[in-house]
Length: 404
Figure 1 (cartoon, rainbow, N blue to C red):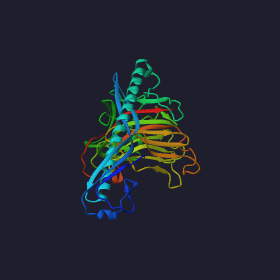
Figure 2: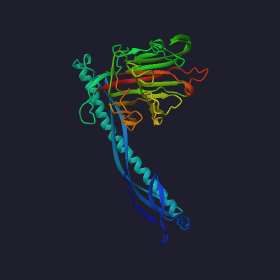
Figure 3: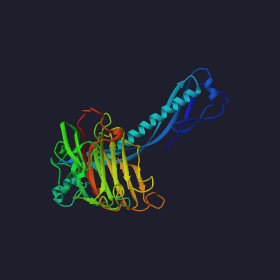
Figure 4: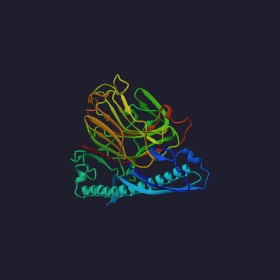
């Protein structure tokens, strides 16, 4: 972050003054001696100039022939602004003028960075939508999947699209997904996963997965347990349809609007062979993000891989997101040596596999993993309050794209 200051002081000052340090937003600047702040002469006007550099990351959408594309971009901008303040003391005038200049420069730099990023993001969104439209018109939609505009790896070579679902239809594409039931997964936090349209639906260009309170109890089997509950949820998996080892995975999703604990959403990957290295978590699990309603301002990624060490789970509990109920882009880049989770292009969790890390070998993250999208009840401190009737709570998934 670059900054420069030029200042002018108008009014009576003392011929000699010692220097002290004033810290403004983490930056040290030279200020008059505090003794001058006691000067009760006529008011003092102070001017200073501040140069500030800021960056902005944005996402834009565009539609071409009914195909919706998305583009992300980051841009930086620098702005210089002058701040002026009048106060009874030299110290007060100096401080107020500096803060005034900083705030003006920061706002101007952010505005310009946002404008530049949006222009580039819109351009990329149009290219993304056009690529989908071109693929459909050329018949590619019936063959190789289309992930929109070409993406490049860090080495400059292109990623190859291996899986894509834009959820543009009205029914779930069962060639890509299977609906999960509690009986099939043996998993429940007190709800029953049902495969019907109330809990798993495709409409308005998105997959809608819903947790709701039914008018009467339903019963389902969860392993050797029988669950009787008024709560039902929705989940889908690509198990048996698609799985991959390594690559780039991207989900654009909007989390449920919540007003208290009780609900959990997840975009996650699990191994095709869940016991290859042993029972959970020894065979691995990649939670790209999980959303707990008790923490409404953050999304939490996690890697579960099971070991004797306390590092069998790697996570970051401080990935804060502005309005998670709006659409955001959640990504995973997975290589033999790193797993990196991003939110709107910003790194949230990075885990390296090397002799200096708790996970010193690729296992278990060297096997095919399948995709899972889940909306369900919470548990523990995130349990639904007794007697709660709030329903439904829906996670919307705009698209899922995978590259190799």
